[in-house]
Length: 630
Image (cartoon, rainbow, N blue to C red):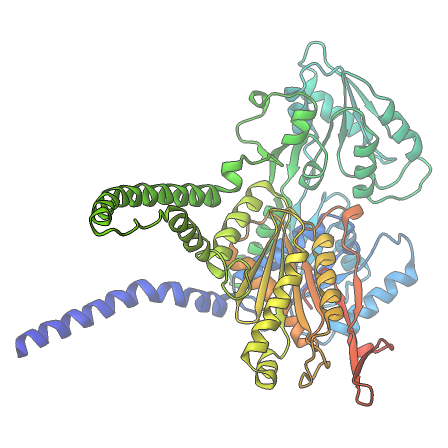
């Protein structure tokens, strides 16, 4: 007996030791990384442009997320948008450096990351006395005529590969006879012309190359719109001023070129290919942002030494082609390079809904098997009962196959439906979110989530009872179902008084409009809640999230992100909407920053009527839109 107990004790100790060996590295690694890389000082990101005006939004999101994933606290990451397209405004630049000195002059900085050349030049010239010993990690287009600085630094060069883009364009469209390069008024036009011709002169006959550098902006668009068959357009992404000296934002010009052109357009930015260009050798914005963050982490960990002799590293580039544009211009897939990324390719029904199709097939098969077995059993039993009935003078039992089939269907539905609210249950939610996130990661289409929490629901149950609480949840579920307008939209009960809406292929603005529609509908419903510290009727706090690949995000990460927005809504006083757009669209699709006044209701005790109080209340204003680390 004692020997058996001793053996089991030894086995238990060995099992526990093996468990620790497998479990401890996974648990300890984040803490070890945090100890290694988390600075006691701040990382400051200086943006050249305003939010939403360039693909810097993509890159910044990748930088911040990579830093956070490796243990850097969001509280230690600060982002400042300098809006340096105000060229030559000395007062503006002076105000900017004074602002930086006021905010961060006395703060310990670990590193400064500058987005694009204007931010780097501003720091090197106007801000040379701003933390002069702090190393700089600069993302720039080129390193020509760099201002002198003694700061330790590394340059990530985002250089457009026009020759590779032109080569890809002619591979996809070999009958091209005319290539028009959209250029503004700059000193590099002849170098660009020489670079492109060097890559296509071996062709016979070689296409004619035309530059638009001698045209003003309007004439350039007219020229692009007049091109016909056999022509293509190449947009290198550095159109900053036209012949008349007017200044432009390249991304806005790219959008207008895409709209004006009646021929295929190629570019050198992944953002353009994902929104209308046919393809190109593009700079992978997200991968470049991740690389930038890892360089910063290596320096913080002591693995990358920096000096005033700048280290130059190339950004990450790859071939990218748009599926829809391939179809539009009748280009076959066999012309696409095997290593090229293919974006916006539609999924088959099986790829879109594998779980639903498989579940439906299994349910149908099980139902068929049950019916067949039941009929066989009833056939044998029925003959015996009829024989017994004829002898005893009784009536045979009625056929109940339909009842059995209905019961099987109800059992199948119960595995996917929440019994109280009639919405999809947590099991169905997990299944659908995993499927939709995987689909969004493949296609790059936006996926939006809305998370809702009934405010002070425990107090409601205590005041009115659990039956009234159930009625309240059913009422909320009914309103949620009403804003699910498409078959793919799914309203789910997340748990308790929390709900989640999954909106596939829905941009941020559309998700916000759904959330606001529910918010207003619940206010009109005016379910009495006398004990609520927020209002005298039932309210909800709402978090909204929109994401699109890249980067790919798991269901667990998506739930954590939308839950963070819900937490911010509850932390802002409840009965508000907070949202984050991580999809970073083009400017014409950019999210407007919305402001919602939280409706508060005063209970008129004399008439027992609810009157809305919409008087200005600065404390009740909540910004809904893109969020950036503070």
